[in-house]
Length: 71
Image (cartoon, rainbow, N blue to C red; front, side, top):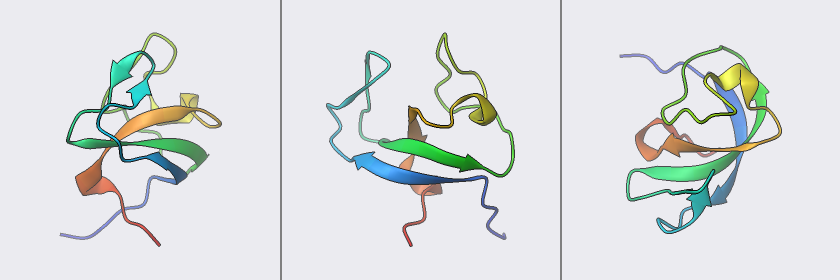
């Protein structure tokens, strides 16, 4: 199965107790700043403010660790 890059982001926190839109990250996500969106997809954890990736540039979101590639 190939990889598909949907956005570039900056890692903000790996701390499972860190909050993203008033919800703790937990063990399966990291907190990231969305920089550039290449493909608009539904967020793993939508909020009242954001439902898709294209709505989140310049903001933090929770993103599943298994879908993050550090470069």
